[in-house]
Length: 113
Image (cartoon, rainbow, N blue to C red; front, side):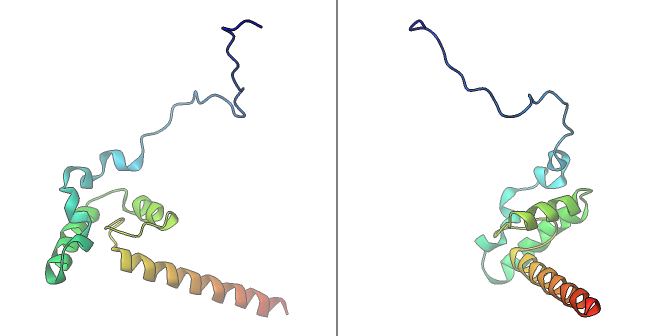
């Protein structure tokens, strides 16, 4: 081996040569909005509520609303307005989903017995 030899580790995966669709957020209406309105936590009292509602107005126009919310729930996103919901609304939604999953699981166990 020469001093100029370069050792490279072979990748464990196939090369990424397939075209990928644009990310859902690339054309979302929120990209044209002021960033600060999507973080009502940075405001106080009634102003925070108004700012959140302004952000949700952009969300209501968005064809990617469901994808945005799903991504925020998957992370879980702790701040800001995502998918037409605020952070407390997403926490409540996650809690309801967990409770529904527990009830469904309990029902399956009851029916199996």
